[in-house]
Length: 377
Ligand SMILES: NC(=O)c1ccc[n+]([C@@H]2O[C@H](COP(=O)([O-])OP(=O)(O)OC[C@H]3O[C@@H](n4cnc5c(N)ncnc54)[C@H](O)[C@@H]3O)[C@@H](O)[C@H]2O)c1
Ligand SMILES: [Zn+2]
Ligand SMILES: [Zn+2]
Image (cartoon, rainbow, N blue to C red; front, side, top):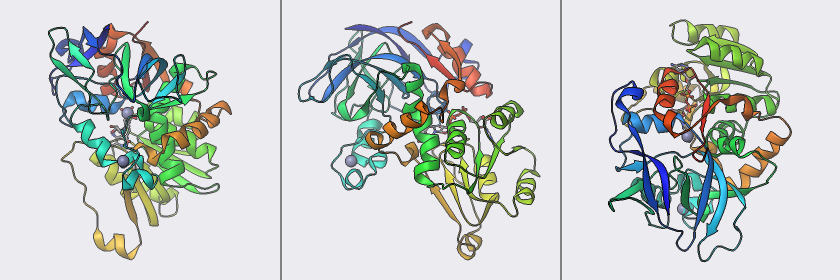
């Protein structure tokens, strides 16, 4: 079928994107679903910083590619072998492809499945297929086994989780990345318990979900930190007990002073090296620094090794919030139903294809939370 999609032909084009226009909206050909795949009408897809990082060339990707990895939609057709999902079902997509059989998958860690990741690196669906082509026949790569900046997407069965029809699809879309990543980092990776303290460094779509989860989990002290004062104001309204402006040298000392030596759990959700250094610096003795931010693939951070050992600190990564999507999306949506993950507050705007390049300028400025593309609007 012919559909409209936003194609990235070249990474690293200069800003402003309103002028350089890295995303080109074109009619493309989408093949129907093969065995183990399904066709989804994309209802909404979020503009996440990871898509911006792809545009910026922080991570090389096979080109041309249709990006977009956070979304929700309606199943329109299922391929052979799929019996538990049917047309008209609503789904949230899953951006970390997984095989279901490897030692990571069977241990409940499909988010780090190397088999799924190899297909992703190759720009394929986890079935090995590419279902998108330009009208001249040139194959187009998939992003994260998905490619959601498109009116429709063909995805593998494991790349989507069925959800209730009561959830508005453009709220559901945010669960596909920002919620699983931010709330999952707090509830799964950190295992935060009621009464504990936590800091969140970087208050974008991912960080604000970490904040919501910390409030929902009953944290006593919730320290929120960003370089943008407007994000601090929102964080205060949404349950942060203390806010600090990052970007000056005193920030780490101020946080340590205010928290008797730092927090036991610090979540980094900015994706920059200064933010990660700040996160390490405000982690208390014996505490954990958990990073969900994704800087350039070659960036590294240094830390004092002896202090790590003698003070029993830990530094660990959190990918897709350590989520098992089939297990965790239902409970995260349960929190949403109880008003504990108010993702509707994160929606800065709804946009159409003609505003997508401008949308990435706004995300890059740090002035927005989640902009939701409605490809069929
Ligand atoms: N680990 C995962 O599974 C996963 C999934 C999604 C996104 N990500 C990554 O998470 C990061 C956040 O994504 P997002 O969509 O929320 O981005 P965003 O652009 O909406 O938010 C980033 C926030 O960090 C703030 N910031 C920048 N530098 C800072 C600093 N030095 N100190 C404190 N705050 C600072 C910005 O002002 C902004 O509010 C990105 O790096 C993204 O690639 C990771
Ligand atoms: Zn994302
Ligand atoms: Zn696997």
